[in-house]
Length: 322
Image (cartoon, rainbow, N blue to C red; front, side, top):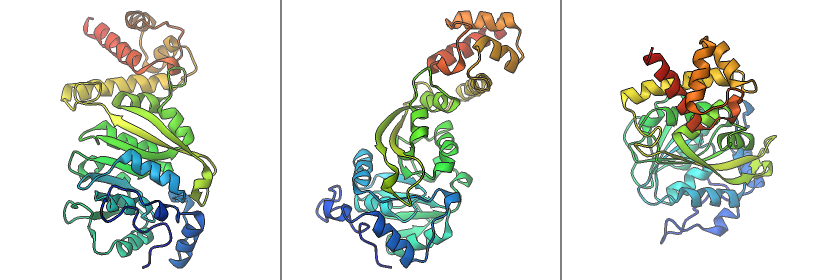
């Protein structure tokens, strides 16, 4: 198969980390439409198939990823291989998971010579290990030996479960450079006052930064909403969720039961919510809130990660103290 305009090498032969602007500038919606037509492919809305067609956004992702020869990278939903090609050109060892068998076949054809079977071995620099299947059926943290990073234009309908899989247990990636829906990016990076369960979960495990807003016109076909490139950097051992110690995991389970209970009624007063959702005596809830320094009339969405942790400890202390 012949690579379409914009999908050739994006790095010079002499310097695999250098971006080739002339190659990037050939990436546009017309090139994507031409490729889909030539391959007899139709996008599937059910799989969130909106392909990146903006060279500036692709370059921004590559700069944030900073991939260099030998870096191990997990890509989820490689699609047409646009980002994949750029990562391979930088010398990265890429493991990619693709659900659509038509696109998996296209990727094998396109990267013939550097693609290896998904079940064979860990890829080396400039090699692609292609796994055909549903990312949600994979042991994602176990697919790539650490240290590794995740660089992906995530299928939007599975963003939340993918983040849970990658952050909940180790080995966690060192860094994630992800394309997500703008609304989801805002939720992930939300400050206290606009928090959700997902905000608390991700910020407990990692630092989150929105690197760039991406307009819908940057994709082919254009989705109904804007997107964003976000940077997610999991905490190091000893910092919040940086450990997989069994005692810490058990404490995490208690924390998430508490947070889930709170966000079932996130706009109601926290005291009333916890009494109803946890079935605890009002006096115990009052005592725990006071011990954590949290006003009983606060709403769940106003609590920071640190305050949820303080409340969990206070409730646990009251239980163990009788």
